Length: 114
Image (cartoon, rainbow, N blue to C red; front, side, top):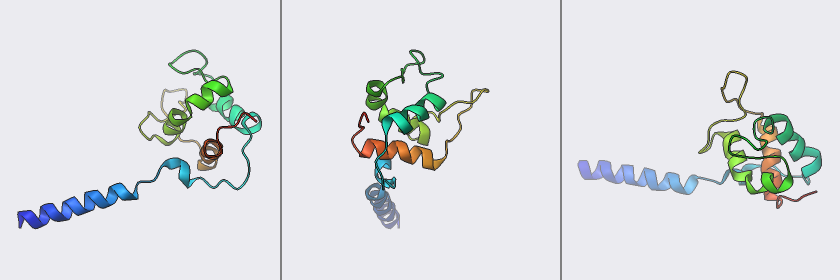
């Protein structure tokens, strides 16, 4: 009995690992995302208020946003990071999926400085 329970648990755990998908690949990227028109304003409106040479990340230009894109998306999705952005009470809140997907599309498209 113990062996069969262990075997079933083992199969379930192994099968779950194969189902995990990188969060970037779920984005619907039908058009080119502009860094200057979409990503920079997204970061300025939701992140740069706290992350402008303080709190560990400076998210003020293409180079810093591009190099921290995994952490940014992780924080937006609460995937290995604290949920961000932070409200006035210090609580994280989720941005709309459509906004996060634009960030993911930009990453998928090579993080262009366009």
